[in-house]
Image 1: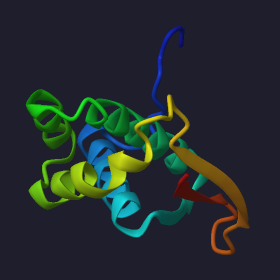
Image 2: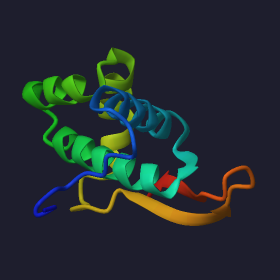
Image 3: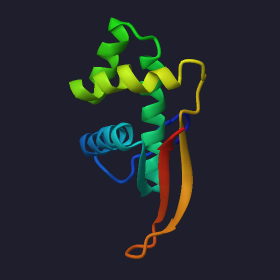
Image 4: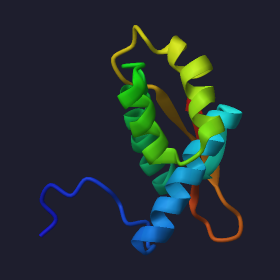
Length: 116
C-alpha cells in the first residue's frame, strides 16, 4: 500500500535521488529557473519550499538546518542574504511549475521550475 508516502522515487536509489534533488535545488537558487522533467520538478519544488520555509526563521539553527539540506556554504549565504527577503511575508508557494512540452528523445514531459 502507498498510504502517506510523500515523495516519488523517480526510478533512482535513495542516494542518487537525493543528489539529483539537492543539485536541482542549488541550480534553481543559482539561476532562478530550470528546465527538467515534470516528476523531477515536483520533487525539487517540495524540497525548495521546505528550505525556504526553514530559512525564513533567519537564526543560527535555521542556517544549520539549511546547510544540512544543501551542504554548500556559498549557497546558504546566498539564500540568507538575497532570497529569503522576498518571501518573508509569503506563507508558501515559493515555486511555480509550468508545462513546457514533450522532449523529443524519449517523449517525457518537460516543465520549467522557477522561483516566484
